Length: 311
View 1 (cartoon, rainbow, N blue to C red):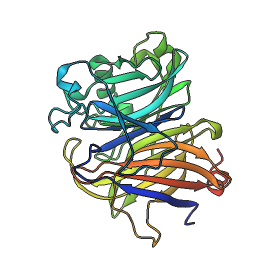
View 2: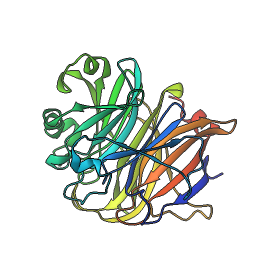
View 3: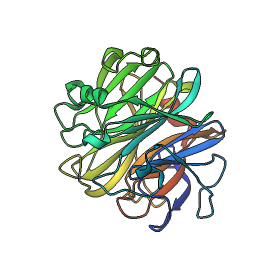
């Protein structure tokens, strides 16, 4: 096992499948949810299922408006650009936070989906995104581009993909205040800036994060894409998996490679924890196809990785 990292399973969805541009993954109970950045629905299946061509996904609409309930894919200009998906505890129940990137006006919305009653409501609106957009501690002055969100059930972490100006800002919010109706701005507790790896001289940018509460660590992914702005896609060089402390100290970095130690030119955009085993922790990763084939990986981070990453 290279550097405590091992790919256990790998599946590629074809372009003609209903799975496109995967950008987030999260689990609630026995269910696994996926989201794509060019759709207005969640994909749901049993978390114990092996993901393959025969996997049966239930589509869960996130909008009532007829434009979105067609369950079709959207153009780059009109898509809601849901780039972050995370399970948070809200009003005493595990719910799914589905967050738009904020990179254009129609992408400034974060929704909360309750699996118990299938209700969807807006958690963060345009005014909240305007605060994020003008928060230099998050963007460093670059255009807003939210790619990751995670929670330890007390705090909400929102990550800027800082590959354009190499400013990787993170804001930490009081989740209890948000539940009590406070604005995002008034719920801000802390901020920090990550130091992320490069690949062939190109900057990586945070693409998703998961707070592993049992170990008090954040497991994240960072993708390397050669693009000059937050809107256009670029050539993908590869992706890293990272571990860092809740304060942002990087404890582990691993470039994702195949069994022959060749770098995989994939843009990982989603990560969620699946299970603990005697060998370590198992995670599910998903990739954004950018018009090609989306991929799903199941991987193991060994116990030694976490022993060395103890914060």
